[in-house]
Length: 193
Image 1 (cartoon, one colour):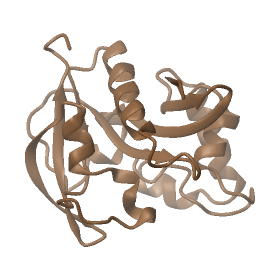
Image 2 (image 1 turned 135 degrees about the vertical axis):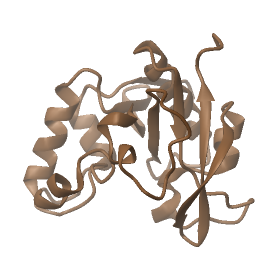
Image 3 (image 1 turned 90 degrees about the vertical axis):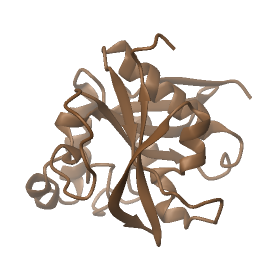
Image 4 (image 1 turned 180 degrees about the vertical axis):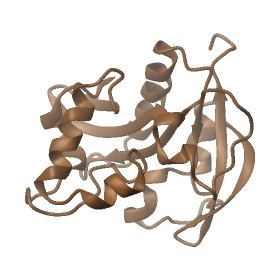
């Protein structure tokens, strides 16, 4: 399996990864952290997909996609923190004033999970942020100490996944997901790696 990670610039592939089976369904579309709360809550059904279509057309794109050949198999949301709800989140602290990027969602399609695609996605998200001059990338995974994380909550990733990608824990948070505390992890991009 040769996984290639690319910027998320193909709406149909983003829709495959984060969109609903029915166009009128009110699913996340990975917008809950990307948009201000008021806008996020006001969008419903097909309007959610149209908003994602707009984001995909913007520069920088809203994340990265992983491909196995021509098949899209993964998604990671990454964007400047200032353009996300993490800029105002009271449970996730700001450790300094660096214009960091946030990496908040990693998804792998069923049938492809457990094959290491998540590691490709995290690396690809870091590279996208680096290509736009980000000084660092932050993630907010659960600190599950190896315990099983419910699949619906696994989108935030685990501390171990991010440690393997060179992230270090820089702060505790007041956020809990699936019974596990979330930690703020950061990968400094100023070191040239």
